[in-house]
Length: 367
Ligand code: IPM
Ligand code: MN
Image (cartoon, rainbow, N blue to C red; front, side, top):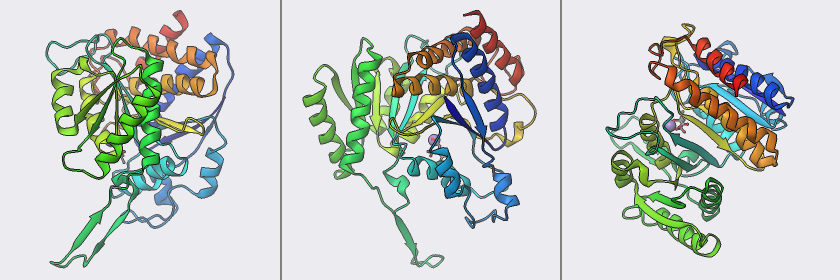
């Protein structure tokens, strides 16, 4: 297996290093070989190459670099975001660019409360908080279609289009149903989240695709629908109700931050940008955390969970049982370590970044 490493900005390289330590331990344990190559695609590189901090002026990543990334089995990303660079330049120039160009059409976000992790939801525990959000990752209002006219005048007009295709909705929906079968939980249910009472065009495309595909191809799986606003209430009130959620790009972005806090926050939450037939990219949900950079106090659990997902999903996409087993072992090791930590918040873990990584490595070796 060949993995491309993009440490990125701020604390990104620190947490990625812990994930790589765990990878080394589990590869030895399970007995597989791998190779890694680092790519410097940081905000610092953009600035040093003469990039303007205020507007996108030169590529954050070059086409030749994307072509090289394409040849890897997986990409492991630390964090994107630089305090001296205007919001959007790196996010669009690197993260969204890779998602779109590599056609990573699924954003997979497991929402699992690990043992011993604090949740702000009263009376809810690990048995209640265990579901998965499948977010469409290449369409919706993220495509950048639209524009601005009469900018800076009182007549300023801006549009930002919701680009929804039947094709895009269908592939996300099928992925969600397949994932639900693979999860095989007692609930066996996929919930579509949209806003069909207002978005009567795009929502309707999703709604019909969901029910037509579900009825014809997945009669064994229950179908459920939530408006996105109501879904936010239910995530808080009855998280135990959910099994697999499928939704469009922006709704998925928003509800997965809500989901992240109920699973213990950005120190824990991991995500995968998936192209099941191409190259997928795995990342901790947290940002680059400039104020903690270099202090070794940031929580690496999310990055280690992203590594677990990288192994499990790469194993599942390629039919490699050894990798899938390695992913499961890493997740089990995380679950052995979280009860030992004081908190999942940065600087409050009771351990440093590297100590948490060492604890997971030890748990992998002992498994
Ligand atoms: C995420 C992030 C990104 C998104 C940002 C950084 C562009 O919030 O992965 O959820 O909106 O998709
Ligand atoms: Mn987000």
